[in-house]
Image (cartoon, rainbow, N blue to C red; front, top):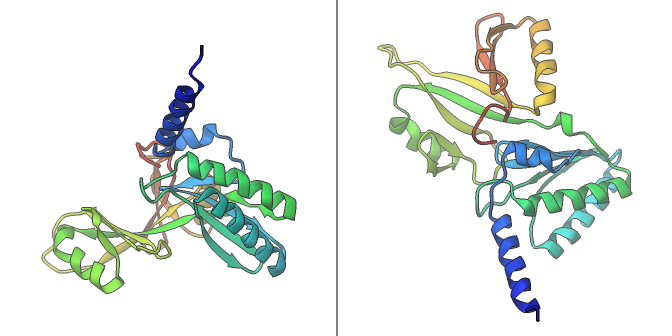
Amino acid sequence: MTDDTTDDHSDDHSAARTDKTVLTGHDVEAELLEDWRILFAALHGRFETGDFATGLALVNEIGRVAEEMNHHPDLDLTYPRLDVRLTSHDVGGVTQRDVRLARAISEIAARLGAKPQPGETSVLELGLDTADFAEIKPFWSALLGYDDSRDDLEILDPDGTMPTIWAQESEAHETPRQRWHLDLRVPPETAEARIRAALEAGGTLVSEARAPAFWVLADAQGNKACVTTWLGRDHA
């Protein structure tokens, strides 16, 4: 005779393990989430609502489903769009919990007529060139109210609304200087179009040696910025 109780418990344990497993960019792609893109440790979605009332209705429906699933997204409602970010904070990345909620949100958006625009999603980081980040890290953490406990070369906004600051290790200089550059994380399919637009606007391509992980660009005065994707990396 089959022990159904044992099988049920086994399924529960398997699901629990899956819900704690951080997914890679390739794992997320395999889920075929057409409305979503993985940028760093979160799923990002943008839905054009056309008007504020539809956006509010979408937020309310997402809130209802999120409560049912006991898994909650970050929402940014403006006129006329809603930006959604999904991540599992307890494990620091995207899990099957986020995948399930993403599918549910896509269904709600389709029902309300909100148009997904995944190619418009992006995340901005600030890179600071420094020979000794440990020396200045406490200052920037205190000034910005950032969390400096998770990574030796990064400080994070605990609310997730301000850019992450990370250290680009460089040689020491006799004359103190501050050099910031922007890192723009975009979906892989939009990177080349964004680069082409920047070049047509007077920029130059400094290096593509690490593409598709990142391309280094510069403006007409030599100020550098990077366009980055999750491809070619160990982590998304």
